[in-house]
Amino acid sequence: MNVMNASPRRKELTRLAAQLFVQEGFDRTTVRMLAQEMGIKSGSLFHHFKDKQEILAAVIEEGTQNALLIARKALNECATEPEIRLRTMARAHLETLFTDRNAHVVALFEWRRLDPVASAHLSHLRDAYEALWVSVIDEALDSGLIHGDRFLVSRFVLGALNWTVRWYDPNGSRSPDDLADELVAMIMPTAD
Amino acid sequence: MNVMNASPRRKELTRLAAQLFVQEGFDRTTVRMLAQEMGIKSGSLFHHFKDKQEILAAVIEEGTQNALLIARKALNECATEPEIRLRTMARAHLETLFTDRNAHVVALFEWRRLDPVASAHLSHLRDAYEALWVSVIDEALDSGLIHGDRFLVSRFVLGALNWTVRWYDPNGSRSPDDLADELVAMIMPTAD
DNA sequence: AGAGTAACCAAGCAAGCGCTAGTGTAAATG
DNA sequence: CATTTACACTAGCGCTTGCTTGGTTACTCT
Image (cartoon, rainbow over all chains, first blue to last red; front, side, top):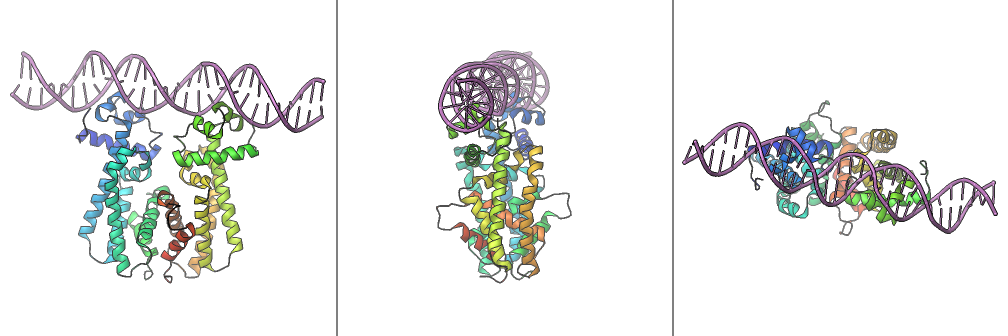
Protein backbone atom coordinates (compact mmCIF):
# COMPACT_ATOMS: atom_id res chain seq x y z
CA MET A 1 0.00 0.00 0.00
CA ASN A 2 0.99 3.58 -0.47
CA VAL A 3 2.21 5.00 2.80
CA MET A 4 0.14 8.13 3.33
CA ASN A 5 0.83 9.47 -0.12
CA ALA A 6 -1.39 11.71 -2.18
CA SER A 7 -1.48 10.06 -5.58
CA PRO A 8 -4.04 11.41 -8.02
CA ARG A 9 -5.85 8.09 -7.97
CA ARG A 10 -6.15 8.24 -4.22
CA LYS A 11 -7.53 11.77 -4.43
CA GLU A 12 -10.19 10.59 -6.83
CA LEU A 13 -11.12 7.63 -4.65
CA THR A 14 -11.35 9.90 -1.63
CA ARG A 15 -13.81 12.10 -3.49
CA LEU A 16 -16.03 9.14 -4.34
CA ALA A 17 -15.83 7.86 -0.77
CA ALA A 18 -16.98 11.23 0.52
CA GLN A 19 -20.04 11.06 -1.67
CA LEU A 20 -21.00 7.62 -0.38
CA PHE A 21 -20.33 8.56 3.23
CA VAL A 22 -22.74 11.46 2.91
CA GLN A 23 -25.41 9.32 1.27
CA GLU A 24 -25.27 6.31 3.56
CA GLY A 25 -23.21 7.31 6.56
CA PHE A 26 -19.79 5.87 7.34
CA ASP A 27 -20.97 2.80 9.24
CA ARG A 28 -23.43 1.69 6.58
CA THR A 29 -20.95 2.13 3.76
CA THR A 30 -19.21 -1.20 3.16
CA VAL A 31 -15.87 -1.60 1.47
CA ARG A 32 -17.68 -3.46 -1.27
CA MET A 33 -19.96 -0.51 -1.92
CA LEU A 34 -16.96 1.79 -2.03
CA ALA A 35 -15.14 -0.52 -4.43
CA GLN A 36 -18.10 -0.82 -6.76
CA GLU A 37 -18.55 2.93 -6.90
CA MET A 38 -14.87 3.17 -7.81
CA GLY A 39 -15.09 0.49 -10.46
CA ILE A 40 -12.68 -1.89 -8.74
CA LYS A 41 -12.93 -4.97 -6.53
CA SER A 42 -13.09 -4.65 -2.77
CA GLY A 43 -9.66 -6.15 -2.23
CA SER A 44 -8.01 -3.58 -4.45
CA LEU A 45 -9.15 -0.85 -2.13
CA PHE A 46 -6.48 -1.81 0.36
CA HIS A 47 -3.76 -1.06 -2.07
CA HIS A 48 -4.61 2.63 -1.68
CA PHE A 49 -5.73 2.69 1.95
CA LYS A 50 -4.54 0.47 4.76
CA ASP A 51 -7.88 0.64 6.54
CA LYS A 52 -11.49 1.65 6.17
CA GLN A 53 -10.59 4.06 8.94
CA GLU A 54 -7.87 5.59 6.78
CA ILE A 55 -10.43 6.30 4.07
CA LEU A 56 -12.51 8.20 6.57
CA ALA A 57 -9.48 10.09 7.82
CA ALA A 58 -8.52 11.02 4.27
CA VAL A 59 -12.01 12.30 3.52
CA ILE A 60 -12.20 14.32 6.70
CA GLU A 61 -8.74 15.77 6.24
CA GLU A 62 -9.63 16.86 2.74
CA GLY A 63 -12.94 18.28 3.84
CA THR A 64 -11.56 20.32 6.67
CA GLN A 65 -8.55 21.52 4.74
CA ASN A 66 -10.75 22.58 1.89
CA ALA A 67 -13.11 24.48 4.15
CA LEU A 68 -10.16 26.21 5.75
CA LEU A 69 -8.62 27.14 2.42
CA ILE A 70 -11.81 28.49 0.93
CA ALA A 71 -12.62 30.51 4.04
CA ARG A 72 -9.13 32.03 4.21
CA LYS A 73 -9.16 32.93 0.56
CA ALA A 74 -12.61 34.48 0.78
CA LEU A 75 -11.62 36.51 3.83
CA ASN A 76 -8.45 37.76 2.18
CA GLU A 77 -10.35 38.97 -0.82
CA CYS A 78 -13.19 40.72 0.95
CA ALA A 79 -13.56 44.10 2.61
CA THR A 80 -12.81 44.83 6.25
CA GLU A 81 -16.29 45.73 7.43
CA PRO A 82 -17.31 43.21 10.11
CA GLU A 83 -20.72 42.67 8.56
CA ILE A 84 -19.29 41.80 5.18
CA ARG A 85 -16.72 39.50 6.72
CA LEU A 86 -19.41 37.69 8.65
CA ARG A 87 -21.46 37.24 5.53
CA THR A 88 -18.41 36.06 3.66
CA MET A 89 -17.63 33.40 6.24
CA ALA A 90 -21.19 32.14 6.26
CA ARG A 91 -21.22 31.97 2.49
CA ALA A 92 -17.91 30.15 2.37
CA HIS A 93 -19.14 27.66 4.92
CA LEU A 94 -22.26 26.83 2.96
CA GLU A 95 -20.27 26.69 -0.24
CA THR A 96 -18.09 23.89 1.11
CA LEU A 97 -21.21 22.10 2.33
CA PHE A 98 -23.17 22.16 -0.88
CA THR A 99 -21.12 22.68 -3.99
CA ASP A 100 -19.88 19.18 -4.75
CA ARG A 101 -17.79 19.09 -1.64
CA ASN A 102 -19.24 16.27 0.38
CA ALA A 103 -16.02 15.95 2.31
CA HIS A 104 -16.86 18.86 4.59
CA VAL A 105 -20.21 17.31 5.43
CA VAL A 106 -18.45 14.08 6.35
CA ALA A 107 -15.97 16.02 8.47
CA LEU A 108 -18.81 17.54 10.45
CA PHE A 109 -21.13 14.57 10.79
CA GLU A 110 -18.79 11.60 11.02
CA TRP A 111 -16.00 13.03 13.12
CA ARG A 112 -16.94 10.79 16.02
CA ARG A 113 -16.20 7.72 13.93
CA LEU A 114 -12.51 8.59 13.76
CA ASP A 115 -10.29 6.56 16.01
CA PRO A 116 -8.57 8.60 18.75
CA VAL A 117 -5.23 8.72 16.95
CA ALA A 118 -6.61 10.14 13.72
CA SER A 119 -8.88 12.48 15.63
CA ALA A 120 -5.96 13.90 17.59
CA HIS A 121 -3.95 14.26 14.40
CA LEU A 122 -6.70 16.18 12.62
CA SER A 123 -8.07 18.25 15.46
CA HIS A 124 -5.65 21.09 14.83
CA LEU A 125 -7.23 21.61 11.42
CA ARG A 126 -10.67 21.85 12.93
CA ASP A 127 -9.37 24.16 15.64
CA ALA A 128 -7.82 26.44 13.04
CA TYR A 129 -11.12 26.64 11.23
CA GLU A 130 -13.01 27.41 14.41
CA ALA A 131 -10.45 30.04 15.34
CA LEU A 132 -11.16 31.77 12.05
CA TRP A 133 -14.81 31.95 12.97
CA VAL A 134 -14.13 33.23 16.45
CA SER A 135 -11.94 35.99 15.06
CA VAL A 136 -14.64 37.13 12.65
CA ILE A 137 -17.23 36.96 15.41
CA ASP A 138 -14.92 38.98 17.64
CA GLU A 139 -14.67 41.74 15.08
CA ALA A 140 -18.44 41.85 14.84
CA LEU A 141 -18.76 41.98 18.61
CA ASP A 142 -16.14 44.70 19.03
CA SER A 143 -17.81 46.90 16.47
CA GLY A 144 -21.15 46.48 18.21
CA LEU A 145 -22.66 44.78 15.20
CA ILE A 146 -23.87 41.87 17.31
CA HIS A 147 -23.87 41.01 21.00
CA GLY A 148 -23.38 38.00 23.24
CA ASP A 149 -20.68 35.60 24.32
CA ARG A 150 -18.05 35.02 21.65
CA PHE A 151 -17.93 31.24 21.95
CA LEU A 152 -21.66 30.84 22.24
CA VAL A 153 -22.37 33.04 19.26
CA SER A 154 -19.90 31.28 17.00
CA ARG A 155 -21.22 27.89 18.03
CA PHE A 156 -24.81 28.87 17.56
CA VAL A 157 -24.05 30.27 14.14
CA LEU A 158 -22.08 27.21 13.11
CA GLY A 159 -24.82 24.97 14.42
CA ALA A 160 -27.47 26.78 12.42
CA LEU A 161 -25.30 26.55 9.30
CA ASN A 162 -24.37 22.90 9.74
CA TRP A 163 -27.94 21.86 10.34
CA THR A 164 -28.91 23.18 6.91
CA VAL A 165 -27.54 19.94 5.51
CA ARG A 166 -30.55 18.22 7.03
CA TRP A 167 -33.25 20.27 5.36
CA TYR A 168 -31.83 22.40 2.56
CA ASP A 169 -32.98 21.52 -0.94
CA PRO A 170 -30.45 22.64 -3.58
CA ASN A 171 -33.18 22.50 -6.21
CA GLY A 172 -35.39 24.86 -4.24
CA SER A 173 -35.82 28.55 -4.81
CA ARG A 174 -33.13 29.73 -2.42
CA SER A 175 -29.42 29.81 -3.08
CA PRO A 176 -26.80 28.98 -0.45
CA ASP A 177 -25.65 32.61 -0.51
CA ASP A 178 -29.24 33.55 0.19
CA LEU A 179 -29.28 31.36 3.26
CA ALA A 180 -26.06 32.83 4.55
CA ASP A 181 -27.34 36.38 4.18
CA GLU A 182 -30.60 35.57 5.95
CA LEU A 183 -28.76 34.04 8.87
CA VAL A 184 -26.48 37.03 9.27
CA ALA A 185 -29.46 39.36 9.03
CA MET A 186 -31.21 37.36 11.73
CA ILE A 187 -28.54 37.99 14.33
CA MET A 188 -28.03 41.65 13.46
CA PRO A 189 -30.15 44.24 15.29
CA THR A 190 -29.85 46.88 12.58
CA ALA A 191 -30.69 44.93 9.47
CA ASP A 192 -33.95 44.47 7.62
CA MET B 1 -43.42 -11.21 21.26
CA ASN B 2 -45.63 -8.41 22.47
CA VAL B 3 -47.45 -6.83 19.58
CA MET B 4 -46.62 -3.14 19.87
CA ASN B 5 -47.59 -2.97 23.51
CA ALA B 6 -46.24 -0.60 26.12
CA SER B 7 -45.36 -2.88 29.00
CA PRO B 8 -43.33 -1.29 31.78
CA ARG B 9 -40.47 -3.65 31.00
CA ARG B 10 -40.42 -2.51 27.41
CA LYS B 11 -40.41 1.13 28.50
CA GLU B 12 -37.38 0.47 30.65
CA LEU B 13 -35.56 -1.36 27.86
CA THR B 14 -36.34 1.50 25.49
CA ARG B 15 -34.75 3.94 27.91
CA LEU B 16 -31.58 1.88 28.09
CA ALA B 17 -31.50 1.52 24.32
CA ALA B 18 -31.73 5.28 23.92
CA GLN B 19 -28.69 5.74 26.10
CA LEU B 20 -26.63 3.30 24.06
CA PHE B 21 -27.79 4.77 20.76
CA VAL B 22 -26.60 8.18 21.88
CA GLN B 23 -23.25 6.86 23.05
CA GLU B 24 -22.42 4.64 20.09
CA GLY B 25 -24.86 5.50 17.34
CA PHE B 26 -27.54 3.13 16.10
CA ASP B 27 -25.43 1.26 13.56
CA ARG B 28 -22.59 0.53 15.94
CA THR B 29 -24.89 -0.65 18.70
CA THR B 30 -25.28 -4.43 18.40
CA VAL B 31 -28.15 -6.43 19.83
CA ARG B 32 -25.63 -8.11 22.09
CA MET B 33 -24.54 -4.76 23.51
CA LEU B 34 -28.16 -3.83 24.09
CA ALA B 35 -28.87 -7.14 25.79
CA GLN B 36 -25.87 -6.88 28.06
CA GLU B 37 -26.81 -3.38 29.15
CA MET B 38 -30.28 -4.73 29.94
CA GLY B 39 -28.95 -7.67 31.89
CA ILE B 40 -30.36 -10.32 29.56
CA LYS B 41 -29.12 -12.45 26.65
CA SER B 42 -29.36 -11.23 23.10
CA GLY B 43 -32.03 -13.73 22.14
CA SER B 44 -34.37 -12.54 24.88
CA LEU B 45 -34.45 -9.11 23.31
CA PHE B 46 -36.71 -10.33 20.55
CA HIS B 47 -39.42 -11.23 22.99
CA HIS B 48 -39.96 -7.50 23.51
CA PHE B 49 -39.14 -6.17 20.05
CA LYS B 50 -39.57 -7.96 16.76
CA ASP B 51 -36.63 -6.15 15.20
CA LYS B 52 -33.64 -4.00 15.92
CA GLN B 53 -35.52 -1.48 13.79
CA GLU B 54 -38.48 -1.63 16.14
CA ILE B 55 -36.22 -0.69 19.04
CA LEU B 56 -35.11 2.39 17.16
CA ALA B 57 -38.70 3.25 16.29
CA ALA B 58 -39.73 2.88 19.93
CA VAL B 59 -36.91 5.14 21.10
CA ILE B 60 -37.65 7.80 18.51
CA GLU B 61 -41.37 7.72 19.18
CA GLU B 62 -40.76 8.18 22.86
CA GLY B 63 -38.26 10.94 22.27
CA THR B 64 -40.45 12.96 19.96
CA GLN B 65 -43.58 12.47 22.01
CA ASN B 66 -41.76 13.54 25.11
CA ALA B 67 -40.41 16.67 23.47
CA LEU B 68 -43.87 17.51 22.20
CA LEU B 69 -45.47 16.97 25.61
CA ILE B 70 -42.92 19.02 27.49
CA ALA B 71 -43.07 21.87 24.99
CA ARG B 72 -46.89 21.98 25.05
CA LYS B 73 -47.01 21.93 28.81
CA ALA B 74 -44.40 24.65 29.10
CA LEU B 75 -46.22 26.85 26.59
CA ASN B 76 -49.54 26.39 28.36
CA GLU B 77 -48.07 27.46 31.64
CA CYS B 78 -46.17 30.51 30.47
CA ALA B 79 -47.16 34.07 29.69
CA THR B 80 -48.33 35.32 26.31
CA GLU B 81 -45.49 37.70 25.50
CA PRO B 82 -43.74 36.46 22.35
CA GLU B 83 -40.30 36.88 23.88
CA ILE B 84 -41.15 34.76 26.89
CA ARG B 85 -42.75 32.11 24.74
CA LEU B 86 -39.68 31.94 22.53
CA ARG B 87 -37.45 31.56 25.54
CA THR B 88 -39.75 28.91 26.94
CA MET B 89 -39.62 26.86 23.76
CA ALA B 90 -35.85 27.05 23.59
CA ARG B 91 -35.56 26.00 27.22
CA ALA B 92 -37.97 23.11 26.75
CA HIS B 93 -36.02 21.94 23.73
CA LEU B 94 -32.73 21.90 25.58
CA GLU B 95 -34.36 20.29 28.57
CA THR B 96 -35.41 17.30 26.50
CA LEU B 97 -31.93 17.11 25.01
CA PHE B 98 -29.97 17.14 28.23
CA THR B 99 -31.90 16.05 31.27
CA ASP B 100 -31.64 12.28 31.08
CA ARG B 101 -33.75 12.13 27.95
CA ASN B 102 -31.47 10.62 25.38
CA ALA B 103 -34.46 9.62 23.30
CA HIS B 104 -34.86 13.09 21.83
CA VAL B 105 -31.23 13.15 20.78
CA VAL B 106 -31.72 9.82 19.03
CA ALA B 107 -34.85 11.14 17.34
CA LEU B 108 -32.86 14.04 15.92
CA PHE B 109 -29.66 12.30 14.93
CA GLU B 110 -30.74 8.81 13.92
CA TRP B 111 -33.97 9.59 12.11
CA ARG B 112 -32.44 8.59 8.81
CA ARG B 113 -31.90 5.05 10.06
CA LEU B 114 -35.64 4.45 10.30
CA ASP B 115 -37.08 2.34 7.55
CA PRO B 116 -39.57 4.19 5.31
CA VAL B 117 -42.62 2.64 6.96
CA ALA B 118 -41.68 3.66 10.47
CA SER B 119 -40.53 7.04 9.28
CA ALA B 120 -43.87 7.72 7.62
CA HIS B 121 -45.70 6.56 10.71
CA LEU B 122 -43.75 8.87 13.01
CA SER B 123 -43.38 11.92 10.81
CA HIS B 124 -46.65 13.43 12.00
CA LEU B 125 -45.19 13.66 15.49
CA ARG B 126 -42.17 15.51 14.22
CA ASP B 127 -44.34 17.75 12.10
CA ALA B 128 -46.50 18.61 15.10
CA TYR B 129 -43.41 19.58 17.04
CA GLU B 130 -42.10 21.71 14.21
CA ALA B 131 -45.50 23.36 13.83
CA LEU B 132 -45.30 24.37 17.47
CA TRP B 133 -42.03 26.10 16.76
CA VAL B 134 -43.31 27.84 13.68
CA SER B 135 -46.30 29.19 15.58
CA VAL B 136 -44.09 30.63 18.32
CA ILE B 137 -41.78 32.10 15.72
CA ASP B 138 -44.76 33.58 13.92
CA GLU B 139 -45.89 35.36 17.06
CA ALA B 140 -42.44 36.80 17.49
CA LEU B 141 -42.37 37.94 13.88
CA ASP B 142 -45.83 39.51 14.01
CA SER B 143 -44.97 41.47 17.11
CA GLY B 144 -41.82 42.77 15.47
CA LEU B 145 -39.63 41.07 18.05
CA ILE B 146 -37.53 39.43 15.36
CA HIS B 147 -37.39 39.56 11.58
CA GLY B 148 -36.84 37.23 8.67
CA ASP B 149 -38.48 34.32 6.90
CA ARG B 150 -40.58 32.17 9.24
CA PHE B 151 -39.30 28.82 8.02
CA LEU B 152 -35.72 29.90 7.80
CA VAL B 153 -35.73 31.43 11.26
CA SER B 154 -37.26 28.38 12.90
CA ARG B 155 -34.84 26.09 11.14
CA PHE B 156 -31.83 28.20 12.01
CA VAL B 157 -32.90 28.33 15.64
CA LEU B 158 -33.55 24.60 15.80
CA GLY B 159 -30.24 23.94 14.12
CA ALA B 160 -28.36 26.05 16.62
CA LEU B 161 -30.12 24.29 19.48
CA ASN B 162 -29.67 20.78 18.12
CA TRP B 163 -26.00 21.31 17.46
CA THR B 164 -25.41 22.01 21.14
CA VAL B 165 -25.33 18.26 21.77
CA ARG B 166 -22.05 18.24 19.94
CA TRP B 167 -20.21 20.66 22.18
CA TYR B 168 -22.18 21.37 25.33
CA ASP B 169 -20.62 20.17 28.56
CA PRO B 170 -23.25 19.60 31.26
CA ASN B 171 -20.53 19.86 33.91
CA GLY B 172 -19.47 23.28 32.66
CA SER B 173 -20.41 26.61 34.12
CA ARG B 174 -23.46 27.25 31.97
CA SER B 175 -26.90 25.78 32.47
CA PRO B 176 -29.16 24.70 29.60
CA ASP B 177 -31.56 27.51 30.48
CA ASP B 178 -28.62 29.85 30.20
CA LEU B 179 -27.91 28.64 26.70
CA ALA B 180 -31.52 29.06 25.65
CA ASP B 181 -31.64 32.63 26.90
CA GLU B 182 -28.39 33.54 25.15
CA LEU B 183 -29.67 32.20 21.87
CA VAL B 184 -32.92 34.14 22.10
CA ALA B 185 -31.00 37.27 23.03
CA MET B 186 -28.77 36.76 20.02
CA ILE B 187 -31.61 36.96 17.53
CA MET B 188 -33.40 39.85 19.21
CA PRO B 189 -32.49 43.41 18.21
CA THR B 190 -33.61 44.97 21.47
CA ALA B 191 -31.97 42.74 24.02
CA ASP B 192 -28.64 42.99 25.79
C1' DA C 1 15.54 -6.40 -23.10
C1' DG C 2 15.14 -6.39 -18.32
C1' DA C 3 13.84 -4.46 -13.79
C1' DG C 4 10.85 -2.08 -11.06
C1' DT C 5 6.40 -0.52 -9.72
C1' DA C 6 1.58 0.90 -9.44
C1' DA C 7 -2.87 -0.96 -9.94
C1' DC C 8 -5.72 -4.51 -9.91
C1' DC C 9 -8.14 -9.31 -9.31
C1' DA C 10 -9.83 -13.94 -7.60
C1' DA C 11 -10.59 -16.39 -3.66
C1' DG C 12 -11.52 -16.74 0.76
C1' DC C 13 -10.79 -16.42 6.06
C1' DA C 14 -12.13 -15.22 10.75
C1' DA C 15 -15.09 -12.59 13.23
C1' DG C 16 -19.23 -10.49 14.07
C1' DC C 17 -23.86 -9.54 12.74
C1' DG C 18 -29.23 -9.89 13.26
C1' DC C 19 -32.22 -13.18 14.21
C1' DT C 20 -34.66 -17.99 15.04
C1' DA C 21 -35.99 -22.31 17.17
C1' DG C 22 -36.88 -24.75 20.91
C1' DT C 23 -36.96 -25.14 25.96
C1' DG C 24 -37.39 -23.94 31.01
C1' DT C 25 -39.70 -21.61 34.77
C1' DA C 26 -42.25 -18.84 37.80
C1' DA C 27 -46.27 -16.09 38.29
C1' DA C 28 -50.97 -15.00 36.91
C1' DT C 29 -55.52 -16.79 35.32
C1' DG C 30 -59.44 -20.00 34.31
C1' DC D 1 -55.62 -28.04 39.63
C1' DA D 2 -54.74 -27.16 34.80
C1' DT D 3 -53.58 -23.74 31.59
C1' DT D 4 -51.87 -19.73 29.90
C1' DT D 5 -48.78 -15.87 29.85
C1' DA D 6 -44.46 -13.30 30.44
C1' DC D 7 -39.83 -13.58 30.39
C1' DA D 8 -35.63 -15.63 30.06
C1' DC D 9 -32.22 -19.13 28.39
C1' DT D 10 -29.06 -22.13 25.08
C1' DA D 11 -27.44 -22.98 20.77
C1' DG D 12 -26.52 -21.87 16.50
C1' DC D 13 -27.85 -20.69 11.43
C1' DG D 14 -27.05 -17.98 7.49
C1' DC D 15 -25.09 -14.05 6.06
C1' DT D 16 -22.09 -9.90 5.79
C1' DT D 17 -18.27 -7.59 7.40
C1' DG D 18 -13.35 -5.76 7.03
C1' DC D 19 -9.37 -7.44 5.48
C1' DT D 20 -5.47 -10.82 3.62
C1' DT D 21 -3.01 -13.59 0.41
C1' DG D 22 -0.81 -14.72 -3.79
C1' DG D 23 -0.59 -13.77 -8.24
C1' DT D 24 -1.41 -11.02 -12.84
C1' DT D 25 -1.33 -7.08 -15.98
C1' DA D 26 0.32 -2.76 -17.89
C1' DC D 27 3.34 0.86 -17.84
C1' DT D 28 7.76 3.38 -17.09
C1' DC D 29 12.63 3.90 -16.83
C1' DT D 30 17.11 2.49 -17.56
